[in-house]
Image (cartoon, rainbow, N blue to C red):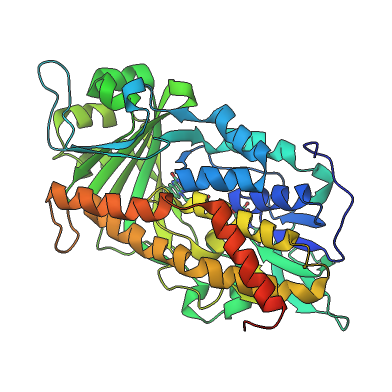
Length: 437
Ligand code: FAD
């Protein structure tokens, strides 16, 4: 397969992907490289990710390789690891946010969580710029905001877009994010899972030049991933842009509701952030003061009310559309790529030849993915509370917090994605031969 070139199709069906974020694009690349006819419909005028950092755990990197080698290479091209060789396998050093640097300029570690890959942060837009090179432009339709789905008399699905146009397809995979229209089409617009839920946490996000960050919290903290735990709030930082920049996200828990569920971001002020974090230690305060005076504030919504199914007939959902999670495990995007790997492997199976096998593919995907993905949503809320010293029965006991993180990160990262896909294929074959309903 030559990146960017469309192969001649081997399947007697076509797939429409709605939404071109990490879920939709990785799936589109994976399907096209397997010669599965696919068209990607995106509401925006071009591909675009927000200019913020994201990091991937080992399961996500395995899933990239299953989807397409080029996605993994794109990741390697743009990712930034911890800068210290001694921290190669460190995911995060956890720090008591109320402490300060010692006379040697060191901010002490409470405990360290490692994994086989260590931390690897990247700028979303840079990753996307690399990944889009792997998918032919002529297979993308921009400016297509899906409104609803109907069926014509011949079993073809018809997508109706906001601009009044329609398009036909054999199957639809909704990768249209947390407010998914496709999810609404599956569960019904009035089902509680049709809408995301506010987790009562919000986050300020910003970038700081690395040199300045080192002067505030010391090189060890700034040049390697770090989590600052405090009461009802926490901050995470990791290097991006090959170590030139520090990515910072400051989370806060609130009892107040988010003012407008239609708009998940609002503009905020640095002064407001400094007021909220004023009890943190002097070194962390110094770091926060380096942020820009105007900041974006992100409401953390998730699908806390889980979707009862990820598919209906030949329509299914993937990525945040299916299982949007709060970001505390740093695994939401990784699970999107896991979805893409499984869907691509199932659709590529030689027994899947025509539209008649597609419902079995989606039923298998639902059976194999839903419980893992919905566990993440729940676990992420719990672990966010652990970081904020507020989880029931855990409180500010660092030994217990460490044990919780290790156990749960293990479930996320210690998985063999190739085996997961192979098992799903076995299940699909049973389903197709009628031995599993
Ligand atoms: P989206 O990125 O939302 O993409 C959906 C796409 O669909 C968009 O392009 C949109 O324009 C399009 N679309 C929407 N509606 C329609 C429609 N009706 N018709 C056509 N197109 C449509 N995950 C990690 O793995 N690691 C991290 O470190 C991490 N950090 C995070 C930090 C924060 C603060 C947040 C909020 C999330 C974080 N995540 C992280 C989660 C991760 O960002 C998401 O899981 C992931 O980006 C979701 O990708 P997606 O493609 O499913 O959805």
